[in-house]
Length: 274
Image (cartoon, rainbow, N blue to C red; front, side):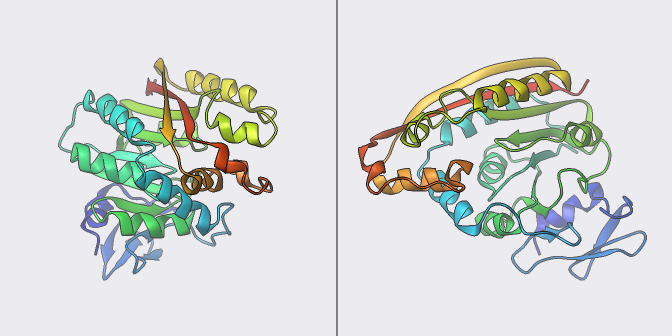
């Protein structure tokens, strides 16, 4: 059994009754006897009556391909630097909320050597995450009902993923760190141009995301990370397939051959629990 999951039992709570619990014979059982079985793949599913996700398995496989090419390594390094300024107490816990297939959670756990919980509602993503690392506690979980106890997280990451500030505030400890990454105005601009220009509403969405973050944190800081990644046609195709840009859209045959690089433009927002 994933030892990281076993050690995470102290901070888990049942998604149905919100009570604590413990592991018995490969299952997490809460005080009211609600039972959640550990998947053979090495993750714990804490989403009762789960609905099909909006991202397909192929999307997460493309993400894994892009990550393995090192395209987001500069972001990992910067996040590790930011987190290194957070005191690592004996009960420190880092939560990656919306971890996808686990790239950031696994890399940061390896770099920082601290307990990490990675959670996402997409079960196919967690299957890939559990293959990536067994030193992270992987949970299938709903962002609107996080299966973690109040004030159990020292820091929460929310990277290129929807946020739930009410739940983040609940699980963060006083003065806990919240770090969110959102796309910059020129993020994957080459792919957007191939689709006929920037998609409507994206700039407004970015402004709104930053405004919401500021409203829900104190001591907010914003920095930009802007660089290019050299791409082959294959890598460019995986970039396209891993993002919502590909949902219901197709590129003309051979369109990606013209690309020799793709721009990664991100905003890193950090703040403290008010």
